[in-house]
Length: 247
Image (tube, rainbow, N blue to C red; front, side, top):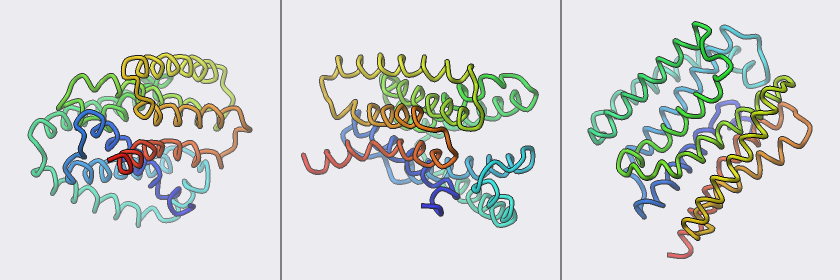
């Protein structure tokens, strides 16, 4: 578990599972392997890069950041290798997926520049959640724009998760208030999706991710809970396993 946590692999696995879930709901089959692999590599690349940037500009916050500091040369090598593999796989993408990915990458760069300049600092988590949800659901909403209906709760779940992580780092009335408001928004979104689909297994992954983060946020806020907060995004396993046994 420490190995998975320190390499941020739980985040990568959660992103893949939600991509597979969204794609299966709308198209009833899984996305092409190259799209799944690219999502995994890009998410891992960005998270490892973010950890390295944290060790440069911020004091060490936890065991994960300490390991990234101690082995920073090795991590930069891994980041470089991931970048090369990603570049090599891009020509195999559907042109519409590639174009959307380039646009999303430009948004990430614009956001990073704005944050570096001190703009949007209070809304860092909101923009991170939006970019995360759009990235995970990219191969779905490019093919089917209506899928934004299921991308919205994913964005909101990511924001709930990030507000919770901020409260772990330090008490904050701002993020405590945002967390409560986000919970009510999620209840509305999940209820609306269930009312529209009448399918419990479509809303179940969202409901489980929401419920786990909700319960964790009511427990003592400790660094050890971060891993379990990320693990909540493995909940699409319920839908995927159900699909296997009901086929």
